[in-house]
Length: 341
Picture 1 (tube, helix red, strand yellow):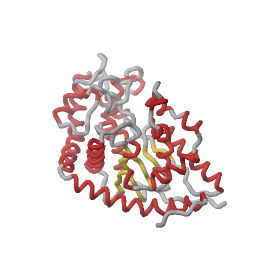
Picture 2 (cartoon, rainbow, N blue to C red):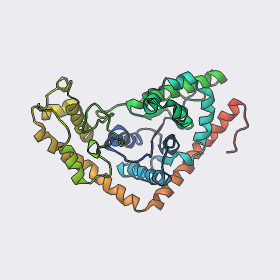
Picture 3 (cartoon, one colour):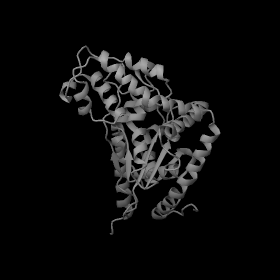
Picture 4 (cartoon, rainbow, N blue to C red):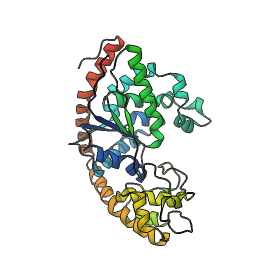
């Protein structure tokens, strides 16, 4: 069987569950911006179908979807360079998701650590959607024949499952139809930690607003949060080994490196020996310079939600030019009459 050559194509998405943070920006969106100039085509998605695997207030979900789109655009994702969509406007995601529900095995799903973490002791009471989330994520990616997906470390297992589903589908039907998508995980701050606890991921669900920098925070708030960030009493080291066992120090240095687009080694060669009383103002100034223009542009975009809706509708139309023929071919491979394209 001749090996299929797939067009280089990037897909990734973020849940519009509210509260876009610095972690989302450094761990994902900043990379999205870079990749839109590195590949033939890039698709970035507000995954609202994933968001409703747990309860969402309808008004909040609509607002959060628009705000996330505004965050994407304000950060530098261009609707002229990339296809920008919200998931529910492209029905092929859900349609392929059902087929993948029938390809994926229960044992595969039960091994997903993120489901175990989210379900906790109440696994019998969570939605079926939360359990099947990874199969829909695989459909999100493979309905575009995406070859690369920029993700955080916490999503790497889901990418491995996506490859398993693609491989099983191809094997079961004797085709080379879906690509073996590659995860793209790199950068100094792919996993940004809480400003109050360097051992916990920065999260919009943390009860303390001081634990995170929200992308809607203004310059004063950004500066105050960084200056009050938890640290230890020692000075900054001159090499990476000196960050061992110092999670808060490592986190702040990682953030500085990512915002300044430098390596951790380069940053430490410059700031090594400084106390946090000197380093924090430098980090605060850098964060304000990089982030406050984004928050300002987000506010401007949110003043015109109709324009955001138009951008997403145009993106959905562009996306369906890709997804509709891929889904139709999938149906034909399975033995079903494919939907009209």
